[in-house]
Image (cartoon, rainbow, N blue to C red; front, side, top):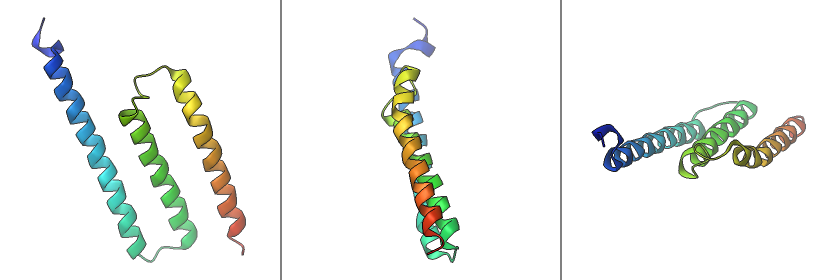
Length: 99
């Protein structure tokens, strides 16, 4: 067995990957918090919050729920409700913009 395929190397690689995902989630969250302090138009802020939330949900599902390594059918089953909720939320925000 070579050192590149040893279980300890695989575990270290996985741990590093999880730390990078955690750092990305922390950066996105920091941006979201900073956005609350900035004077951004409400419609733009809502769109950005939706995009950031979708990005964070994708990272969590792909890496921490291990969808990245599973069959593509599980990914499709997971993504269908996400896409539907995103579409519904977008339509709600667009219709509420004029009121």
